[in-house]
Image 1 (cartoon, one colour):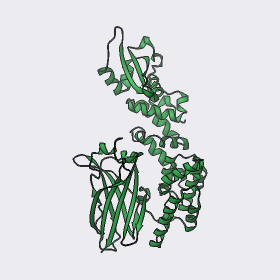
Image 2: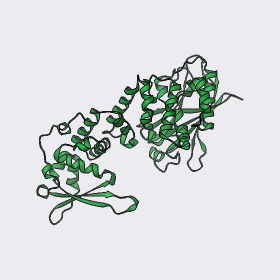
Image 3: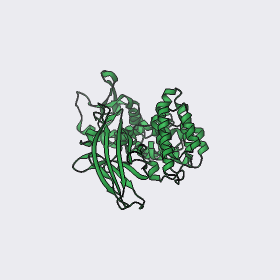
Image 4: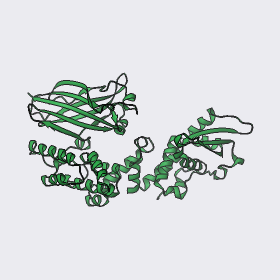
Length: 440
């Protein structure tokens, strides 16, 4: 690492000699770690100075002020943590005393991230600054990939978020003008990193090449054919806009043994219908907003009228990242020549709820498009789609707002997103929109 962690805090004192030393301590800190399978927690005791810890952290200042228990000789405090955080907590306490991290920790990306999260949890700003500076000073492929593999809860934290943004920026810059490098290194990228790279329009990449890259990644990461079928089924349409692939490459898709034949056929048929209806659209004509949107699957019915079923899947982690009045927008999709988006939103009125809306984007040619639509959600118990909202609306070229329901599932946000929610199946929300249009 290029940065010396001893200098990050700009602190002149060093109390390393006092760590876990009874002579310079006024309190016993009992560290209780939770154990799996209901076993009794493990307890470890160290000698600490409440003044040193309280001076470094508002959390410890409050803890020692409000949560103390007198014994015959010395004050005791119990700190309950998860067993996975124990090593990071010990390093954090040592850092508070000495204001530095050992070389073995500095050289370990997982250790630095673990300590950063624990430092953020216990409000130790000097350690947060130290870890952040070290991680940002030497951002590389391993650091970026490991960081983006963290849980959605960790990535949303105030301490980790700047590191995650820097990791995304690093990956895009690394491959923006160097697709051969991406083709060479793709098997080193975890799924989260691959998603960051392929979902950015800064990348100078044709859709045929994007397909080859995803296929190479899947073959390297998943040696078993069944596993490849499953991962490509879930992610191929997210990373490759097959409607913009060449016909020659689409034929390869149909013959590819790495893809489930049924899924491949659906994707290719959808792409071919799109090409027939939009012969003048050039490859890579999507806007940035459309490119970054969530993928959808469209099944159109030509007879007896202009109708379609549109399928959208949202991960629980994606929904959890939504702040109030922020949106998840689908990629643009086309039903009989008209452009639509599906918008999911965490809505705030009397209570926070999950809302869903349909947008129709008109170019000014038709004066009005009448759309009958219905939102359906798949229930976990029956695994069938259940109607939640029906409406009919006349979209015009002047109307840029969506139409839908502010509370699609009729429940609070907490009930909708919780582990007991009846609408998430294996942490995925399955949405279906029935659309029937009539241009006036």
